[in-house]
Amino acid sequence: MASEHQFVLDLTVALGASAISGFVAHRLRQPALLGYLAAGLLIGPSGFGLLSDVQQIEELAEIGVAFLLFALGVEFSLAKLKRVQKIAVQGSLLQMGITAALALVIAVVAGWAISVLQGIFLGFVLALSSTAVVLKLLTDRGETAAVHGQLMLAILIAQDLALGLMLAFLPALDQPEAFWVVLAAAVLKFGLFLVGAIAVGRWGVPPLMRTIAATESQELFLLTIIALCLGIAWVTSRLGLSIEMGAFVAGLMVSEVDYSEQALGRVLPLRDTFACLFFASVGMLIDPQVLISNGAIILGLVTLVMIGKALIILPIILRFGYSFKTALLVSVGLNQIGEFSFVLSLQGFDLGLISEQQYLLLLGTTAITLVLTPAWLNSAPMLTRWLRRVPYLRKWQERLSEPQLLSVPDNLSDHVIVAGYGRVGRVLVNILLNQGYRVLVIENSEAAIQGLRHRQIPFIYGDADAEQVLEKTHLTTAKALAIALPDPISTRLLLQRALIHSPRLDIIARSHTDQEIDLLTQLGAREVVQPEFEAAMELGAHLLHTLGEDTGEIQAVLETIRRDRYQSVRG
Image (cartoon, rainbow, N blue to C red):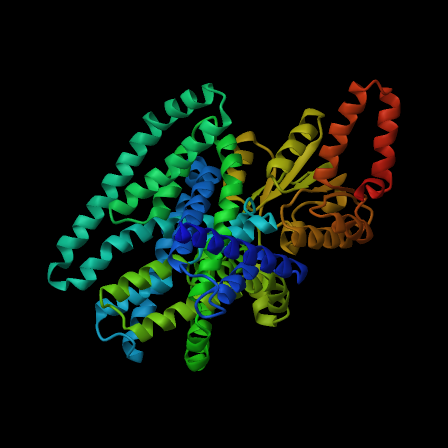
């Protein structure tokens, strides 16, 4: 009984410390996950040692990672995977292959690996990036639907799928005499799991979900979702693959049924709760003594890894035809060592592929790269602007920013330019076309461009805030510009540059936060729309109509709110 009470106390300490540290990080305008990492460091064995059983917390943290990957699978869906399958397969293979090869060469030359197989293992560890950290950052920043967010997630998903192969591949590194036999067995096991998962996802999950949903029991629905997620994750772990891969595949199964949104809504609170335990558990692995005593070595490794991986990823993204800005965002977003590298490192240590000293150095280096990732991602816009000031790089970036795909009539005039063809932009384009207006869409998503081409809607493929793209839009003869971009920085840049080309142009912009409303208005937007406020106002209008208010009075209230830029309802 005492041990049960102790576990409850440990869990309370971990969650409470995470909540406090997350709050402090939020007040300091830092990502909450940095607070969770700090909480783990403080309460863990290397800090104040407030936990009596760290292993139990780490086991709960694994559930958090499973829920993270499950939710990602539900949100991403097989349809979205198909749209970015080229970059997901070819791009991720290039990235992992080049990273592993360079790591092998450097490790052997520097004497960190005494054999080629040991160098290959170190390459595996360094090739992975952090799905949990990047996904959390993109979610917090509202950028999962942005082009760079979709590219990051595509590459990360491919890496997570490759992790299963790597884990199955490790025994082959420890048994060089039976290398090909062990490798063939690992590939066969991986292939059988995927075939089984596809079969269950197509013929087993849909009828099960329909049957459970028909009971109209929310508790039963949630229990079924949890059992499905953790059950498939357990199966993959028993096969020698990763539970994370199993959870992601379970999410993909659910994403193809009609109840995916309901499933996602039920799992999100569990995901967020257990995910904070995962980040805290990563913080517990950080040993300040190791960092201090090997400070110079770890600092060199962190610099080599983060700059090296960014320089590897940047040209790969450019090779697939994306802009320099998008490539830079992806490269600085994926230049850390992933949390699953902890799993690989531990397996390698148990198999004797690395020494205890190397294991501790890998843990310290990985933890620091995870901590630095938010800062890297936040610095990307400033880094882009700084690079544009370098004469040679500026000319090179301008060449890369040239639109590669154009479908713009030469005599285009009196048209409306819509920047962004996501959920908001797509509805806006439909409204304009239904009213008979000519439309030109600017979009940097290859999948969206395919839809525009199919509908024969004029488009430009590129970043809307790039000068070379704006020059092709016939701004001076346009009636208006509607900015529906998911990125706040791109929204501001496009607004400023469009007004330089056409000072009298009517511009309507989408605001992402309350603070942006005034900023975009001051920059020159004719109208600024905040989607959340607009949704609330429509709900309010319908409610007032239900309560018997006059339609004219309701419209007057809404117009007053819009005229003062939502000031009366901001609070």
